[in-house]
Length: 289
Ligand SMILES: C=C(O[C@@H]1C=C(C(=O)O)C=C[C@H]1O)C(=O)O
Image 1 (tube, rainbow, N blue to C red):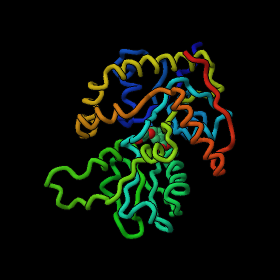
Image 2: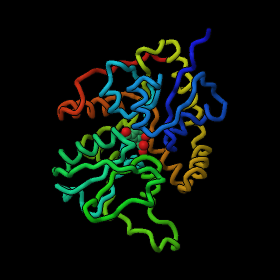
Image 3: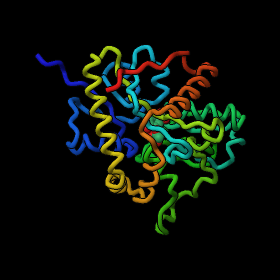
């Protein structure tokens, strides 16, 4: 009897196209079932054991490291602006103390990073309230009043960051006066790259099976990096974001986990441990495929 198919998580944002594009096209085989979900849904799937391997918020690994192994050389990272993790605000961030900041329910890493930035860089203490912030939620965003700022990630952030398009949008709310790119803010603060997402496997999943998934993901990622223009065209068709903006977006992301990325990741975890937000821990890797 063959073991059940592994369940492998994928974020449906365009930021995952470069990792899964060749698998989606049948160019690289993946012996697993792909499960789509926003980052917090995949985090839950890894935490409750319903996913075997997945991309997750970096913070999910830190929360749950004793049950997980990191997949080598895979991540969603930036070294400066990320373009898709944005704080939109009607007032400067330093003036948000005591005010409500709506944080995306899809995100865990960016929310933790935002809290660190408020404590250490903007030095004020807003009240964080969760709110849905996917593309389908954009039209219903309440503006102003007691919610002057909002953290948005992924495709929704790219779209909102691009601003209103054309002159036929007379009813559109005015753009936010201040937009903070969290990759850029982290770089300015620490000088380091930032790792938003990592790929993990359950320690209970047989290593040989996780290794096969890892090998497919690496092969698919390498194909993706060699075909970014084709993937940017697909991203444009899927979201309406300008092709040139998709090209620029992919160029600003790095899908590896090199020494500088690991330095940024451990710096982030160290600061989260200091703030009492995640348990102290260590990085443990699946042996490289
Ligand atoms: C760069 C991004 O990285 C992401 C942000 C995550 C988070 O904040 O928890 C998790 C996965 C990634 O999708 C993005 O989604 O825009």
